[in-house]
Length: 156
Image 1 (cartoon, one colour):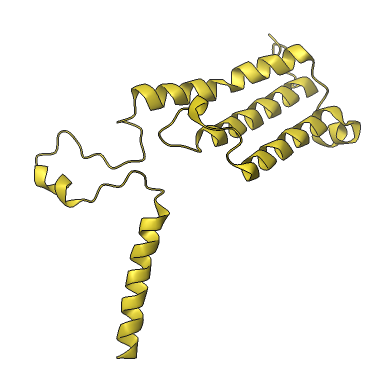
Image 2 (cartoon, helix red, strand yellow):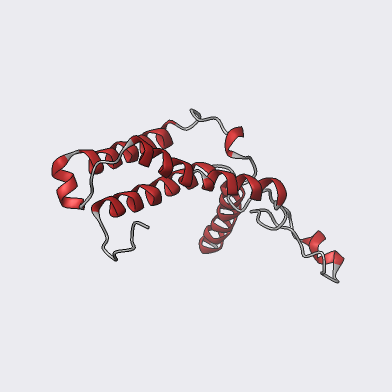
C-alpha cells in the first residue's frame, strides 16, 4: 500500500537499504560455517568479524539517524516498529540457511558428493574426499610440492 501512489519516499529508501544490509550481514554470519547452523556458532570466536559487523551497524545507524548523512543518502529516521519489521524480515536468512543445512545438506554442501546416478562406482573412490572446498592447508601443501619440484628441475 505504500507504493500505491508510485512515489518512492525517503522511508521506502531507508527500509530497503536497512533490509539489504542486514540480510548481507546475517548472510556473512551464517557463511562462517558450511556445516553448522547459526545457533551452533560461537558469536565471539572471531573478533575481526565482530569489529566488521559492529562497524557496519554503526554506519547504518549513522546513515539513518545523523542528519547530514540523511541528506546525502536520502534517508530518514525509522521508528522502533520499522526496525523490528526489518530485523524480522532480515532474519529469514538465518532460518532459510538453517533449513538448508539440516534438511538439504547433500544437495547444497561444499563437500564432494558423487552423483547417486553415476554408473562408475570406482570413479568416486579415486577422488580424494575433502570436507570442504575451503581446505586451504591441503591446497597449500600441494602447491609447495609442485613449486619445490619445479625449483629442483631448474637447478638441474
